[in-house]
Image (cartoon, rainbow, N blue to C red; front, side, top):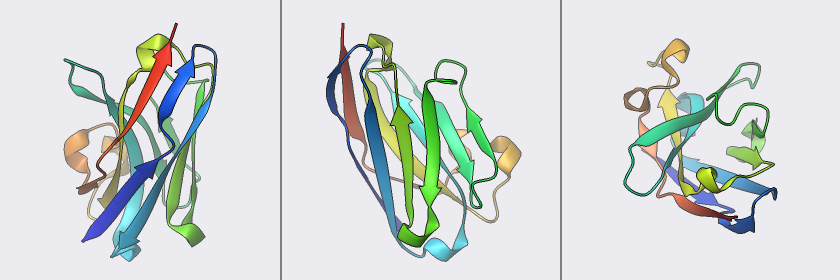
Length: 127
């Protein structure tokens, strides 16, 4: 089992920044890649960003590319999502997730490829 705890969400004005953190604990040795997803009210959960175990490979959805940066600190078992130039449409609950070594990096945008999920953190962007 892997436990994931997100933090760093909050209310920010459009154009502002937030940094989300996701701390992993438990059987993290089998982690292959980690990702962030978000779910806006009344909408499906969608992919935001992903990062490989080494950090050498990253992946972003089109709406956030160039504004968000995903990174990780394996010594701390923590993945981050730096969010800049926030827009009202970024308002959502943000979830981090982890995929085991049995998963495939080329499927990193697919939610079903992830094995464990955090409880989510709310990000609200006012106009």
